[in-house]
Length: 336
Ligand code: 5GP
Ligand code: MN
Picture (cartoon, protein in one colour):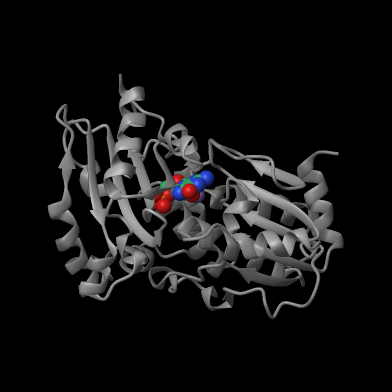
């Protein structure tokens, strides 16, 4: 039996499912979680939605996002299966979840993902690295499921599910601009609009609802711009003092890496974001973006992270100078 068959049969026989995704969730992570969960709720399944970091403010417009819990401490029930969506591996959900899983609380683990660097960590998989967003895989799973169930059952893509899925595709394709935008992304988006997704409502919520603090933070971040001598690597930095001075948090850095990337001639853009202090400096969360000549997923992987060919990430601990030195030499090696 294929994994897909096993998953479909688990869905029809199971009663209670846990749905989760990676830390620092983006629109694809939350949109995919909610879409699959809402679909399964429609056919009478009991769903718990968990994300360690909760739903970022920016994404709280997503229908039913208030259902997502950020702690498993009060979850005392067991699950028939756990869906881990938009994650290269289950460890990206966080240590509390790993612990929960290791205590046998998750049931069968199912990883649904579209990253290049997915690693074995679950029992069953639906992987499609050519899908523009995990939401596209979820859409096709929900369609397959509704066909299987037949017309007697109520699984249909409601406007709420459509809103979540449209958002997941919009976000992961950079509003249909990135190279991962395949024809199917437009086809599914069109179907989702027919099913009730509102492009204007979603783009207004995502792109026209910034806080004043975020713009002030951007004002602190842009002067840190550095471009290497050959003009091919550009980076910006956001440190904890900037967050403090502007009353902002890491969520407010969403999209900042696009500023160094938009420079003519730049191949790789980097955002260094300071997290908690480490032994000899800080933990630096790194966002990597490529315009095509470098596979940044491989660079992320070299530092224990991963992602997509053109958008990836990792974490390096140490001083900023050290983190820059390590990362830039890895990028330069590939640029040669
Ligand atoms: P972002 O820079 O927007 O945080 O992440 C870009 C892409 O890289 C996302 O698809 C994200 O899932 C992936 N990514 C970011 N950081 C990490 C990491 O530390 N490990 C892995 N495996 N993927 C990451
Ligand atoms: Mn994604």
